[in-house]
Image (tube, rainbow, N blue to C red; front, side, top):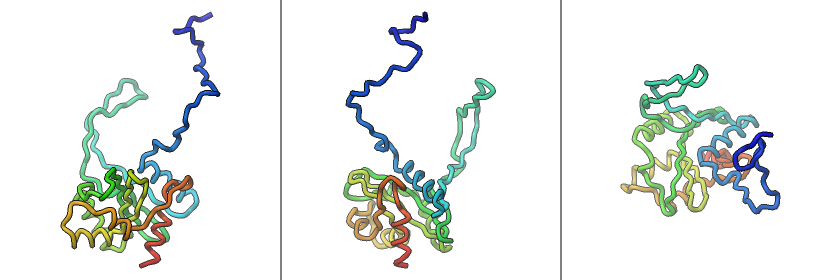
Length: 195
């Protein structure tokens, strides 16, 4: 007989089936995780091909504690990233950035960087469908804000944030569920129908 610490056997301790543990299965899923899951759903159902862009890094130092376990210990961003996602939908080039805010009354423009805005502008100028997906955590609402509206706001208002009311009245609400977690394609269709 083997004596294990605290009298436990080699098996994991069994959970009491009558305990009142709450299941928080998708509650901890981040906004980006939900978008990634939505993209997998769109790909699997042949709706769209949209992927997260990798952030380019320069690896400087790697440790090899064992042959099979290389570990990057020092790396730097090569250059500023552009937007989070791009791909193809209905023959159109799609390019968008995702942002999340805890703010209840507005979306802070400090969340967008100049190089991102320039990239979005360049894609838009070349006929791409460009937008922001904004998640307001306080009310669990996600909006698709077309770049055209974002540019209009930036050109006409000298403010440091976009009021929630402006987004609510002008952007497109993305429905949320299980498959896909955030259906931004449905919101995108509504936007494209108005073009």
